[in-house]
Image 1 (cartoon, rainbow, N blue to C red):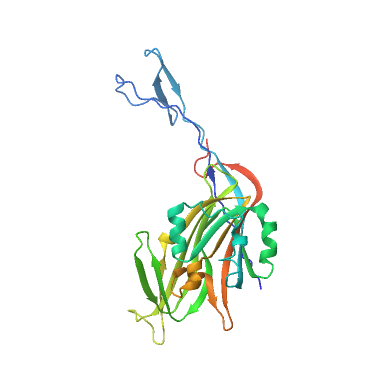
Image 2: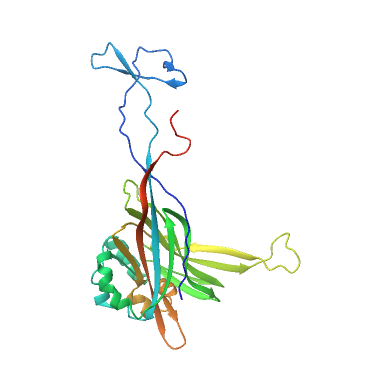
Amino acid sequence: MSRRLNIFFATSLAVTLASAGGCWPTKAKQNPPMEGDVPVVVMPTAGGGDFQSTRPQDPVKTTQQFFELEMYELSAPIGAFSTNADFWKPFDETFLGYRQNELLKLNGFRIGKAPLTELAYLTDKLADAESQESSLIGSRGKDFELPMKRSLDRQDIFYFDQDGRMIAKSYEPSENIFALSFRQTPRTSDHVRLAIAPAVREFQERLTRGQKPGEDPKFERPQTFFELGIELDLGADECLVISAADLAAQNKLVVGRAFMIEERPAQLVEKVMVIIPRLRGELKEVVPQGRQGK
């Protein structure tokens, strides 16, 4: 069963224009001269006695590139991805740095990226996986949610922080999601900057002042595991994979298991997220609203 969600939005990439800097002469006491309603910047010349004037530069121009962010959620028997050495061969698992990579594995997550040319190699290994698809079209996705587990009556989760301390918490009725934001990478038109973090949204019933008879209000209390979040620049010729790590299969309480492993009646099933950015449309040069020249 597949799903597809298209959301249109836009982002811009600033193009920096170099400008010459200067200072007012020490003898100048009067206000800067004006040409109509535009101030003139006065700068000393190399000789020090004469002056030249320059008008403010044209408005800063930007570029606008649309992307389609393809996202696939794959499910297969446990071990198909997390402990499959052949599956991980083409992926770079070091791009986040040693410290962050080890922290993620300690919490039950495994993350890597690879060139799209490796997708042909992965096709056979993903052939038996269940899949769900979603996509975003545009270049700025803010506060988007990828649901991983819904309608959980109760769950106990622990995770390790950056100092190695174990933190545990119990959640009442809740759901587990990946919080995701992305935008065009600054000064680069063919890369997307992704920010992804696991989060738990807890629902609690409580009485509130002014409650109408018969109402059962729900109170949302989301908790984001910010220390386990990642931010990266992903090129249009690359793909990102988020999977369970070994510890998620071994420990029922680790946070990675709460997101990436599902307990079905007959077997344990693990999930893997595959994210692929695609260029859509042509790169356009625009002037931000409110900054157009007269």
